[in-house]
Image 1 (cartoon, one colour):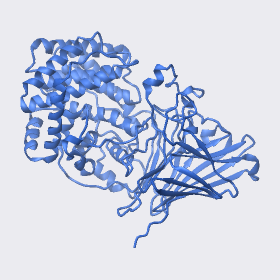
Image 2 (cartoon, one colour):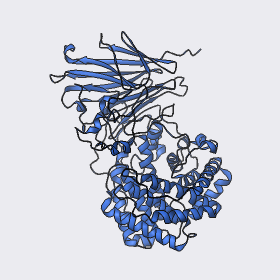
Image 3 (cartoon, rainbow, N blue to C red):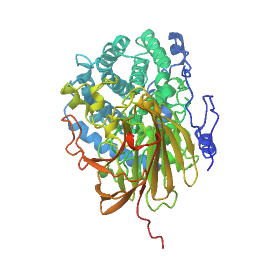
Image 4 (cartoon, one colour):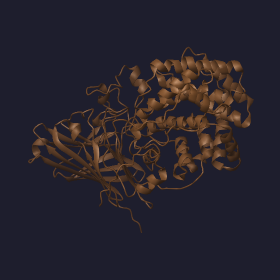
Length: 632
C-alpha cells in the first residue's frame, strides 16, 4: 500500500470541488504548526459602515432579491415547499403558546434564548411569505416580553448572543410592520442587554464554539442598530472580525472540528449564519467562508455519521443525527453546489414526521432556496482528517453488505469539550455498534450537584467520570494511570486502498511510563478490523491494559471472546501476545454516582503485567470480525 501525503495549500480561496478532486491522490499525516491564524479582511470603520451597509431592510440573511428567489422556489421546489409546510405547522403551535419568561436553569438562560430564536426565525418567515398578522402580533408580544427582561444573563454570554440574534432577525424581517415603540425598545435592548455587556462579559478571542456563537450574535445586533449607534456597531463588528479566526483556525487543515460532531453543528451553524448576514448586509463575508478547512468541514460532519445514524461521538458529542434534514449542511450545499450536502430525502419526509424544527429554520429555508446543483462528489471511503483532534474513518464501499463503519482518533484531553479518549475507536457492522463511546452527559445535573466539570487540569474530577476519563474509552492504559492531560497523540501515518491503515503515536499520553506506544488500525477485510499496539516498556512500566467498551453480551473464549447483540455475532480474537485472556468489567450500574448510566455497558480488558514481557517489547494484536456472509 502507498503512503499518501500532500503539501499544504495555504491560500484562502480553495474550492470544495478541487478539494474533492485531489483528495484521493493526496493526504497529509501531520498537522502544521499554525502560530497565528490567517486573518479575515477587516475594513470596518464608521465611515465604511455608512458607505457600504445596505440601507434598506431586510438585510440579515434575507434581501429583496433573495426573497424573490425564495417565493419562486416555493412554487417549484418540493424540498422548499415541504420544509415551509413544516414551518407553518410549527408556527401555528408557537402562536398558541404563552410568551417567554426569564427562566434561568442553573447558570443558563440558554433554553429561553434558543426558543426565542426558533420562534423569531419561524414566525418572521411566515409573516414575510404569507403576511400572517397572527404571526406578526406574536412577534410583537415576544419582543416586548424578552426586551423587558432585567438582562439576558451576560454571565453566560451564549444566552445573550442567541437572544441578540433572535431580536435582530425579528426587527430586521418584520420591523417595518411592527409598532415603532416595539422596534425602538428592541434596538435599545440590543444595545443595553447585548452590545454594551459584550465589552466586559464576552471574550471576542476564545478558541471554541463560544467564539462563533457570540461573535455572530454581536455582529447581527450591531447591524440591527447601526443607524442608531454607528460607533458602537463599527467597534463591535471590527472586534468580532479580528476575533473570529481564533475559532476558525480549529478547522485547519482538513475541517475536523475538535469538539465533535454535535458541537460542529452548533459552532459551524453560527459561522454560516454570520457569513450569510455579512454577505447580505455588506456584499462580502470578509473571507469567512473561504477560511482554510471551513468548507471541508462538511465532509468531516457527514463522515461522523455511521450507517446506523449514530455519530462517532468523541468529545462531548451527542448520540445521533437528526431524523430530518441537516440545515447546516444545506448552507454548504448552496455555497458549493455539491448535492452530497443536501439531505433531500430527509427534507422530503412527511411533515408530521419532522418533529421540532431547528431554531434556525427560517434561515435554513433561505439556504434551501438558494441551492443550485453544480456537482455531486461522493464522500471518501477511507479518510484521515488532521488537526488538534485528528480522526480516521474507514467505511464500506459501494456494494457494502456489512454496513461497515470504523472511526478512530488521536488528540488530547484539554481541548474544549475534550476527553481522555486519544487512541479510542468505535466499530459498527451489520447494523450493530459493537464498540461504543460512552458519549456526553447532562451538564446542568453535574453543575447543580457541585461537580467540578469544567476543570481540565491533570487532577480534575472531570477525568473520574466514565464519559471523560481514559478508563471509559477503548484505548490503552499504562499503570492504570490517567493520560497526561496536555499530551497530544498524532496520527503519524495513513494508507488508503483496499486495506487501509492508520498509525497513531500514543507515547506522549503516558508521560514517560513507556518508551513508546504506537497504535495501528487496519481494515483487513470488509467485515473486520485489527488493532495492533506496539509498546516498548521501561523500568517505570508496571502494567498495560487494553480496553474495549461495548454493550454487547460477552462470552469469553480461550483466545478472546464472542460478542452477541440483536442475534448477531462478533468475534474478538487475541492474535498476540499468546496465553492472555479477557476480563469483563460490568459498568451498569456505573462506578460513580455522577456517572452516566448506560444500559448493559461493560469494559473488555486484556491485562498484561510488565514482568511477563521479557525483552520490554510488547505487541498486542486483536482482530474483531463478523461471520463472513454468503454472497451466493
